Amino acid sequence: MIGGLVSVVMPAFDEEAFIGEALRSVLEQRYQPVETIVVDDGSSDRTADIAAEYGVRVVRRPHLGQAAARNAGLAVARGEYWAVFDADDVMPSDRLTHQVAYLEAHPEVGLVLGLAEAFVSPGEPRPPHFKPIWDDGPYRGHWGTMLARGSVKDLVGQFNEALALGEDVEWMGRATDAGVRAGHVDHVCLRYRIHRGNTSSDPRANQLAPL
Image (cartoon, rainbow, N blue to C red):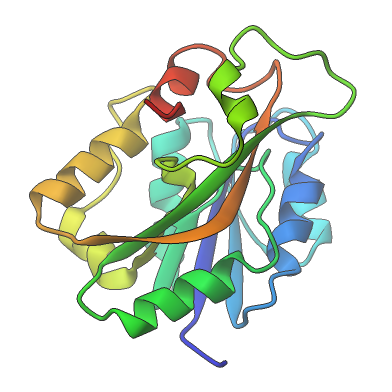
């Protein structure tokens, strides 16, 4: 199947330990064409250099926060579809195949979500913010599983850069208010890494947990 270009925007701040695995998971997608845009949010480590070694587009900018990094990446994205993908997570190789097929089969739907699977970073103990419910297997409702049409970005607007956390939840609320229809595929679309360095070690983990 040949479909439209997918833009994967990857904001990254001091993610040298994980960004290589995250990028490989995007570059190994069975679906093509895909453009990958890493936005280095003023990292003090080798995050940007590692990303450049993978031959993807790297946007380097001062540290202005995750929402600003997402907006910077989406501003240069050229895809018919787009996803924001964190630099410490892993994307199953068939994710984009399933999600693009769904959007092409459902033109009335503006974005599609999938299942997320949480895992503890190998070699680390289970951190305090790990939710026991994640042991039950893949779950719905994780914003990081979203693939959206380019038109949705234009309709809903940018992520709120005034928010230090929860900008994804706030954006999704505005999408709902704007009447954007959401679909769902019963496939794991995100392997969500739980580790002691999560931005989410506290509030964000609670936001992303299934009810």
